[in-house]
Length: 118
Ligand SMILES: [Ca+2]
Image (cartoon, rainbow, N blue to C red; front, side):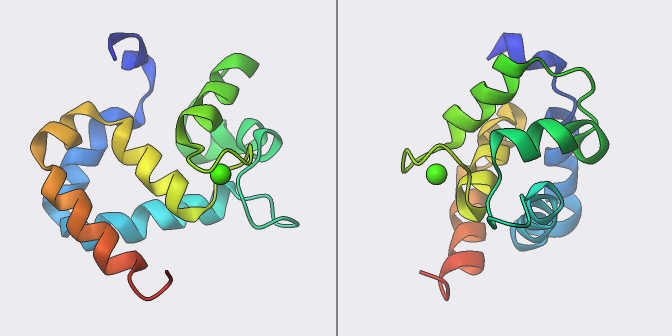
């Protein structure tokens, strides 16, 4: 995971989780999803992520393979794009500090946010 040290959002997730709790953090992550989404398809695609990563996530100068890597890492069902849940889980997984802090928090947050959608 060391090579991901340059991704800036790693650092603020644990702080956000402390301030907002799991449910609040999840809402924040889902806001991020809506900002990154390809409006015509309702999912995050390689193109929408690449186009918006700098303004939304503060990730300036991402290379194509890094953008593709994020999509591939988060793409659970293998359709080549990120739906809302895949994106939120990916954001958690990209934050080692947050994962160390509490996997339970993630489970609670996912239950809160997605119970009624599944
Ligand atoms: Ca997918």
